[in-house]
Image (cartoon, rainbow, N blue to C red; front, side):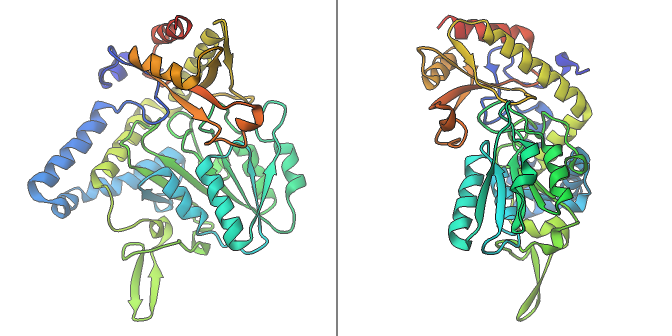
Length: 389
């Protein structure tokens, strides 16, 4: 059980702003803000290098915190400036060759699919699209039929940006393991709202962000890379932190996931992300998941009773992201109207989810993302605002 009063005491503007996560960033808890602000103040007083030296123990604690969040080892964690760059660093390091095949799904994030297309063009890779089952999630039963002698990778998004679908990531992981395939999981939207364990998920690589459900600073992200495969990966670029210039004409990559980091990074942000993870762990990810799921279900129930509103979420399992539209009101116009009333939501467009929304004949959808600090009363206020526009 989460102590909502305590959480809201750590969350600014709760009373004046109905913040439904706005798809981009959840509200930052006070302890996370203080961690970032204190370090920036220290940098201002004594300089960036000196401040980083003083924060060395806390910086190393970042790896322990993320490992605890994901059920991983500290050496399997890398700090990266955002989730997309973390995903890119991993994907572009994979030992894929001309003719190799990648299996993904129509819910895949646009940036990831663009990388598939680029590498298909550059290196002759082939993209295989797994079908959806009747609920709209990836059809796990159909995966085996797509796997051939040149299949090397399954790469999916756990929770797509455009809706509340939760893909059956662990079931996909079992298929990948059974067939000896690499498994890359984008957990940008799931980490922080769903209790994740990389061993149960079966993934070799997982990427995530700090700014969404973890409630960390913007410009922070992380990458998990399993010890099973890290020595087979060649990062797309390296620097003097990711590798050692061991001889005049040779170098040695850093051990473990550190080979995906670089020397210059947002130190205050890394400290803030570590604090955000510890904050989530203190509340308990199972409790967070239960509350966010319950609030998401309550929001769907409330919206379903509004004339002209259509819920657009897919999947057997749904999370705290709720997608919908309202007859006669464009999603962007709806978001703008609600914002004038102090209610933050966002939109997802077919440009960012071409294989999903466009295939369903949807140009865009409104997207409201509840978090554990939201309340039933706020859901009621939100539904009234949608109804009365």
